[in-house]
Amino acid sequence: ILVHRYLQTDHQVKHHNIQFDWGGAFIQVFILLFFMAILDPPKISISGSTPYEVSRLIIALLIIILAILFFKIEAQVKAPLFDTSLLKIRTFVLSNIASFFTFISYSFVSVLMPFYLEQVHHFAPDKAGLFMTAIPLTIFIVAPISGRLSDRFGGQELSFIGAMVGAIGLFAMAGALGLGIFEQSSPAAIVLALSSIGLATGLFQSPNNNAILSAVPNHKLGVASALLAMIRNLGFGTGTTLATGFFAWRQNVTGNFVQSLHFAFWVAGFFAVGAMFASLGRKRGVERGHVVSDGTEQSIHMDHVITPKKEGL
Image 1 (spheres, rainbow, N blue to C red):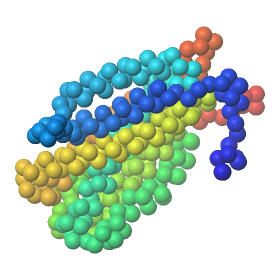
Image 2 (cartoon, rainbow, N blue to C red; image 1 turned 180 degrees about the horizontal axis):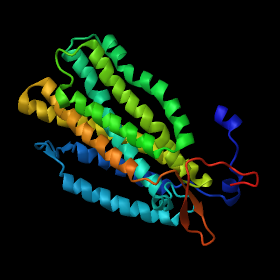
Image 3 (cartoon, rainbow, N blue to C red; image 1 turned 60 degrees about the vertical axis):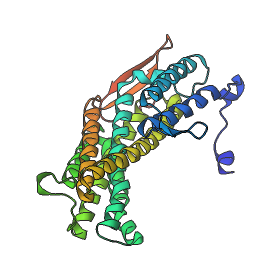
């Protein structure tokens, strides 16, 4: 009801009778399903036979075929689900990659730490949940400040620093430099470790989102926002699968919960390092995409702050 009441009708879409890209949406769903399946291949049983695991190679080939078909469809429809011209904007691409890696690394902590709190420290679920709120509370405090600073000074440095703080925090939780999360870790140390992940996410997310949305033309903000949400959820899903997979594999080898936790955090730390490099590869300032006279997608680079002039930008 609120959407119908307050959102304006897109008269351009209504006038031209542009149809929703059902074909692209259908294929995208299967691409995402197969992507998750390649991380944890399903087992299939035919007519009561012994279940066998589907080959990752077969799933990868299906993903490639569907991806080729998806991009062909998107290049032909009038209102594509994903505008491929956005891939020509370097800031947009690298910022989304950095976001994907960051949410993967964040998922390792959000998935595994509750088990550590309950199984190693024997906390009740409500107490473990209370400890985990250190992450969102820190994000709540840091993110608005980070967003304000990115508007004033540009987001590349803040995104890089956020990813770096995340990498340092994860490596420290994994036992680097004599630090880490152990059986005897104090409640204060646990809260400090979780807060470092919240600090990293808060520093990274606001300027990175700002860079993504500032890099695309105004009439493509909807597509960019949708992709931003999809990348975030895909990062969470991928991180959850990888976190449980690496942790379970290591625990089968060592039989030690904390050592397995450290191994998983080492893996997460390298994803955070990947986010650092992706953030560093962006252009300084703001890269704004626009459409030139020949209809092709270009991008221009602006210094840190965009100040609209009276005659329009």
